[in-house]
Image 1 (cartoon, one colour):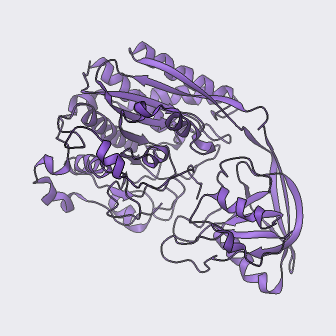
Image 2: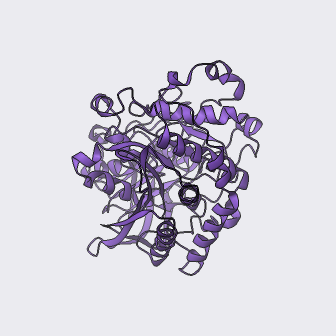
Image 3: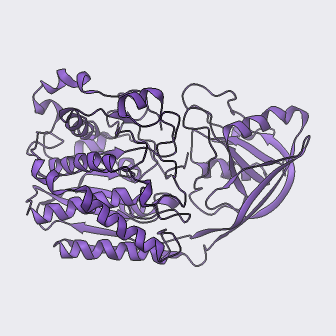
Length: 505
């Protein structure tokens, strides 16, 4: 993700003097709800998720007993709180890596590389010459800009049977692999793009089962390999995976609606409940799930009467490519889809080396704007943080979380994020604290994403902001749109279609 600048309190002084209607939504006093949303409450839920993982092989991934136990815990809490709770079951191809991948250079020199298998990679033992595709950018530009492998033309002159070396960026990984297969590649290596936060060992999801063995490399290793290709380079890959596509594993979304509020203006407040197979996912995304569960319980306890229906959604199979939220959006009848007023998304809100990232709804600081109304949602968060004397920083709608399917159909969205595998800059450390040069979450997608991988200050600050935004959208009189609907805005929306998850691009 791109992090261009921080919004500090002083920068918002002038905007805070403007009437609230300038932002399309009126101010709401959320103090009582925020007081009811406690870090202790969030940690109680997190400990429950950790206990589930401990009892189920260290994971809460969709398709495993650990995910089902997590869902039943959340369901029990929400039913007790008085919500109308439903389970939405769907199937997906369950992926397992049966042995660690191995990648070695055979010539012109022998060298072993640290590598990572992509989710939904095919299996195979391949020894072949390596060939670059067009548009690999070495050295990289200052901002992400590679589109290597995104078009069939990038494989012009590719020799069938070789292994394709492709740089990250520009499109979903699955698109790169599909184009490589069409060009006759025997396997694929995708290396990181090279900008700050995009240098380390990378993996991700291909979105659906593929036949080509596909692994990831660091930027340093990938660019070094690229530099040797004029002299010819041969590599060998060993990838052993299993995608149970024939069985189609079952998993679920959990949906909980308030009993009051206008259902024609439903606010969907979502977080993915699943972890990766490799770990318990206590920050990613136990933190977001625990935060919205705590908000839901506090709203019930305080007998909040929303103007609009609030739907708390706990998504399954996000780590396999936003499959739960995609299933929810694509299976909603058209008339139900028009009732979705806005989406709030909370994915990783307790990162140890955190930054208060806010999705850049109006696209003023990052390349992609959300649908109309998203800028107003962004302002709810930034004005709240400014009012608390806290800095925040915009982050782009990169398609790496469950807002993607919503903005793809024109539904305004927003939310919070405290950082994943990206590296904190010196500027960010000066503003937000923490340690420059280290990842926001050093245990991202690893077994060490446990209870010790949380920053309680981040949980406190971000859950309060989440509670404020949830209440604001639920009870605001003016709302996001002047006529009280989003139909006109939806019809004008040209939001970009996203299909990937945390590391899909």
